[in-house]
Image (tube, rainbow, N blue to C red; front, side, top):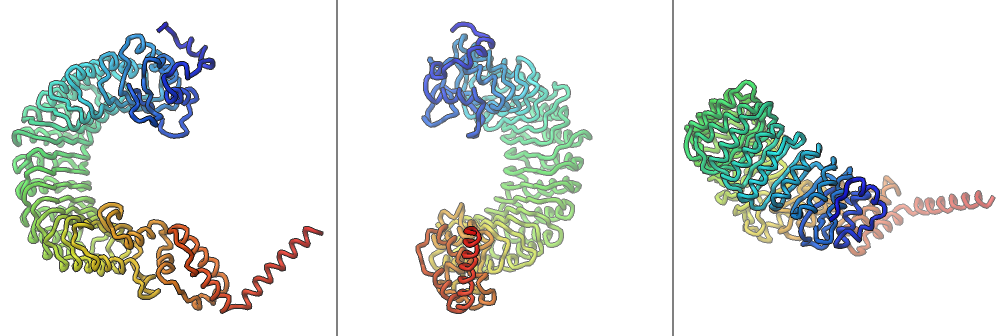
Length: 633
């Protein structure tokens, strides 16, 4: 390939035939899109790959022997609207790489780069040159491909070339990245203190990698890091201490997600407490899940929480807190008035003792909106202790109590605690097969409460049965807040008898008035998208989705073939067009055949008000005659 500069491409741009420099029509169309900078069909992105598995993929440029990389780079470089580039492949011949990079390095519009495959030493070196010249790239992702030793070394060399000042977000996820390999990349990031978000999930990062990352964080001058997400394996106290020392240096860090196997106890976690106690720290979101945190670890963390008034979200799910650990955490959060989210699922057994302590948090954490206590073996006595604290000052809008040990007695206690709650919108009670129709019937008091704002209730994997279905249907009569009743249609034990109760709830056809007063708020009954809901019920729910404000009228028209129009005669003929138009809309949307209802209504109006009809018809004819006479004159 002969050496060309930008002047060459500019001189020949108008004369070049795209078909002559590409290997297929789709590649030619992609170059045409780049040349015109026309992205009206959306998707301002290009994927450089070796092949095109999907023949209809018009964003994937398949680099083959007959494709001119120089022209490809030139058109990418001059684009002002190209925003994303995916790299599945990079040409390995030095001449082709150089030709591609001559133009590519001129681009200033690309904001996001995703590498989906090992593109080799030359590819990563070229990518580093591009990053050094581009001042717009903010995001760089390495997603779902194996990063081995050689690949990790190439990535580390790329990040170590120089500081890429525009790069703010790095994500390395699902890459089977091992500890030693990540340690190389983490060390290379020492020259990238401008990074604001670092996401390292679903890899095999352990002690060496975490120590290298902690050292890098500590070495940064004027760091900008705000979010750090990292999945870890088999780390120890020394590792946590080094990480904490690095975090103290990153005073802008507001989100930390550290999850994985933690081998030891409270010594390392106590160093985290030092991080939270720093006066310059503003931690808002903290996740320490799957780290075997028990009472000792919880006590160490609680000491830091007491000074961290900025905390808004705390996730300690999948640990081993137990009652003692829960009590310690609650004590540490006593001054966390800004706390909005507390996730404590899967932490062993929470009894009435621990839950009684948790209930006191409702008085101080007035902004708490989400509370998750799933999979904690909570029994009726424990739920009674929790509910007692909910009665007065509970502003939780999302409550997850799934997969515990709650029976009818516990559910009744929960209702008593929620009866005055005007904030709760999402309640999850799935997995409680011991709850019977008697317990479900107790929900009526909450559903019928004037303060009820519940929009979604989860009752998946429960033995509801026909009696339970009838209880739920009766409880929802008149309710105007609940939109989604999530349950397992095929395994809930509900037969045709139970479904008929829901059918009557949605559309009581016993009279026009009862149809009008049916429940027109529910949009979903089932697990997902009404897919396993009986057809007649799914149809009523579809009416709600399509008509929104005219649900009652549509149900009346569909359910009552012989409507009496006499009550509407006082409005004379003004009401007739509205009714006929509504009939037409119903038939069009649902594909109904002619039923004669609209003709029947017209007939009733004509029979009941013949003079008005005649006068209206005569008046219209007279009006048309005047218009015709005026035109002829």
